[in-house]
Amino acid sequence: MVEPLRVVHYLNQFFGQIGGEEKADAAPRLHQGPLGPGLLLQERLGERGRVVATVICGDNYAAERQETAGEVLALLRGLEFDAFVAGPAFNAGRYGLACGSLCAAVREARGVPCVTGMFAENPAVEQFRRRAYIVRSGSTAREMAQAMEAVTALLLKLAAAPDETGVQAGGLAVSPEADGYFPQGRTVNVVGDRLAAARAVEMLLARVQGRPFHTEIPLPAPGRVPPAPALRELRGACLALVTEGGLVPAGNPDGLVGARASSYRAYSIAGLGSLRAGAYESVHRGFDTSAVNADPNRIVPLDAARQLEAEGVFGKLHETYYVTSGCATWIESSQAMAAGIAAELRRNGVDGVILTAT
Amino acid sequence: MRCGAAMARELERQGIPTALVATLVSTALTVGANRIVVGTGIQHPLGNPKLSAEEERRQRRRLLECALQSLTTDLQEQRVFEAAAA
Image 1 (cartoon, each protein chain N blue to C red):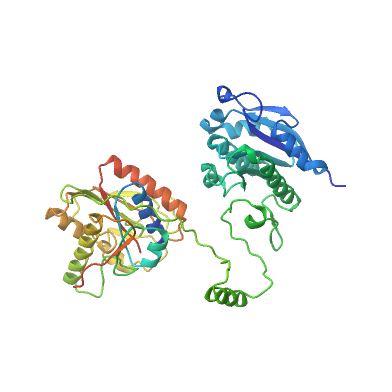
Image 2 (image 1 turned 180 degrees about the horizontal axis):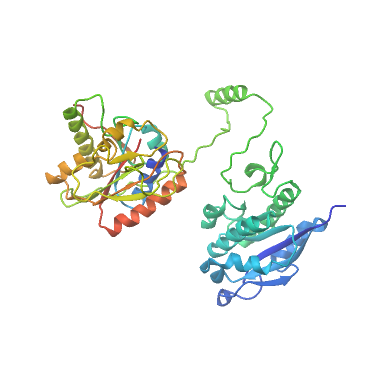
């Protein structure tokens, strides 16, 4: 007989039966045994597990304080447990952030399987799906039963795997498709039953014959966005130069990485008429940089931009150019960097951007 | 390249018109850039070491003019802009 799994459950003030919005500032507390949705969790676990404790914390408290995860870990310090469940949080934003960050923190600190559940559009999904198992749920607590069923099933599978990340010989014990959680962006080697060539030909045939098929390498496609309104006129416009070509001052003084970048750099071009060879270099690791090192204007076209500016074709050039390395860089990182740059551009009254890519 | 297209997409999403000068047009379209200006090469998007210095400068200027044109063009959907030939 396998020992029952000792499970700790996290709930917000509402599901934890402390109160409503007026108790959203409640600090984390520990309750012995299951509570609220934890009773359902206990029922699903049956004899395979036991909800030994419930952590309850107010939504505002958890969402507003970075240190909440540390406080919850401190509460759990003396407690022995084998698995952690949070929520499910459905489409609740603050609750989702708490569930996601606690699953990530408990998994990292205690090395036990941690599972939560959320609606696809909960912002915490994007934030934590790489670090936590987040099962797809409906948008409201009306779908508690199905959500808890999926959470429990995944938790038991992870607990039975030799590693809390679900990794076992030959691949993963669990998969986003089979177990209904949001993909974590990991690449895992598995041994297929047929050679890649046979699978590829089969996919190709399915495609030309109009039959359904599943790619083995899905590429992220973030989807279209409506075009930004055009500039009404150029003569008064302030424009900025941005590049993903990795062009930095010679010697790379601020240590921009050449691949998988998650941050950008900003360099002044005030008073410069062009970018001088030798004063700049590209640290991008995804293309032969000799041509842009020989003439950096080939990737950050300052010389031509200054000419057009001097002729009054457009108003003025923003005095800073922004750079990162677009080599094996995550779409999410790219968007985050662009959001950071956009904030700087807006502060500086920039109207439009010329962004160069390799 | 994918990174640049994703950055252009985000800047556009935030309402800042952005001309993406790039050579891999199909990737730019797939990832969701809106104003795509066809560059002169992956290793030198705005230049060409094979041209004379004078020709190269003229070409770079034409590419920037094309980028400026894309910024002042009202769009309903993605569009690929090509600089006039020399």
